[in-house]
Amino acid sequence: VGLLSAAHCVGMCGGIVGALGFSLPSRVRERPHQLLAFTLAYNSGRVLSYALAGALLGGIGVALGDGWSFVGAFLRTVAALVTIAIGLYLMGIWPRFSAIERIGEPLWRALEPLGRRLLPIDSLLRAFAFGLVWGWLPCGLVYAMLLNAPAQGSALAGAGYMALFGIGTLPVMVGSGLVIVTLRNLLARRLVAVLGGGLVVVLGLYSLLTQTL
Image (cartoon, helix red, strand yellow):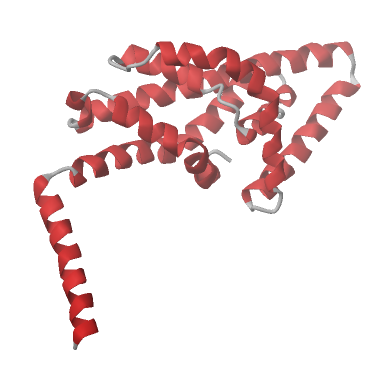
């Protein structure tokens, strides 16, 4: 699911990824290895927050299951139905499924100020801490996956379940962060600006000539 949610992740967090990249010091943005390190730090914190939430709900699932034997079967049924709902959502058949994001809005209002206090991001530790906060951003897909966590059988399994989901999102999230900043750095170069501007001038001249001939 994490790998297949690329379009959702870019639409949901693409702007955040770009803003985080641009807010980094120029010494970081202009050095690919440092930019990669900060991008991985952001996303490592995000994935860890998913794992923590998965552990919490996985533990709750175990506690409920120990008390009532039918709970385990019920949770597995819910997990199966939620998985179907996620598939329909990713197919674009059930876009209103994202309304589940409202569940986490009160928690996000409490955590969002913590993220602001970490700005500007000038160290890997701050980037990691910001990622921990970012991971609690209301997201319908994350919340849907969390509804499956109680059915995993233990807190550790719930944590692993959500961690694997988060790891699945890394290629597109890390890749988009690197591409956005690298593209901006490229477009900021004088030669690229001159070539791009020159191409636009040529197109304008061509359009003018076709109108007058």
